[in-house]
Length: 337
Image 1: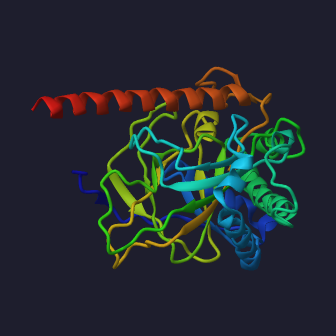
Image 2 (image 1 turned 45 degrees about the vertical axis):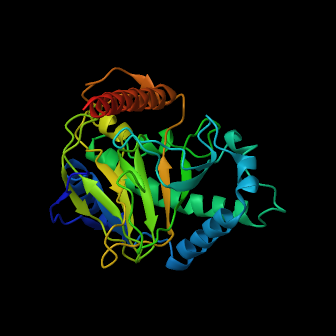
């Protein structure tokens, strides 16, 4: 039986980017305060119209409505692009997330990962245009976060140059499968198990009414897998982009900025939970492979962008194997009783 989740009411900081150039010092102070505490914040007045966001969600629905055998033509690869379905297993649960996703990048990794234009007319151009809009918002946030660390304004922007052939930034379209509110939900069912993001900064686009996101602050170092046990619900609000610090920025800030665990909870109560198809879009700012990463205080050794991501993958794999070993031990003990 799953343990009962403990909740705490926390106010997620909201940061307005209105009049950015004139207000950059105030915006920087607000972002730094949010990064040092929750690692999550909501950005408003960001310049991306609601109609643009809705249009890209419509593109996501077009993609996910395609038959699985068509989507399988662009199956997920080690280049971190393509489509997967119920394939991502989190160490926090040991179970596959009950969703499908499609990941897009800017560069050569996408050469074989786009569907033909005839299969989904206009999808590629629309998605790339939206990605550039998300990049524009990301770069404003990067300038502020660099200032907070007393780095050059363009420090993080240069490390995430989308024109560079080694850029790893991703837009991930997500579709969480619908559930029948009248049927019991298995204890092992997980929409998205608890995890932290690996990159610098994530911009999450949600649709109002499609709830489920929860956060759990409390990590002291980016290498920690463990997490606390008190969660806070983050309801989707029209006009907000939910942003969170990733492990890369936690390391790059010498653990000053916090990469917070988060999840998409399994709906169980029809009176408050959303059981329908849930869609979201996550823009993961991930660095150029060859860029050099080390914080101002040099708490961690210098690594390249590629080495950092690979180390994150290895930590995740090790945690998953440890979870599997614990589950096997528990199964043996239950069988013996």
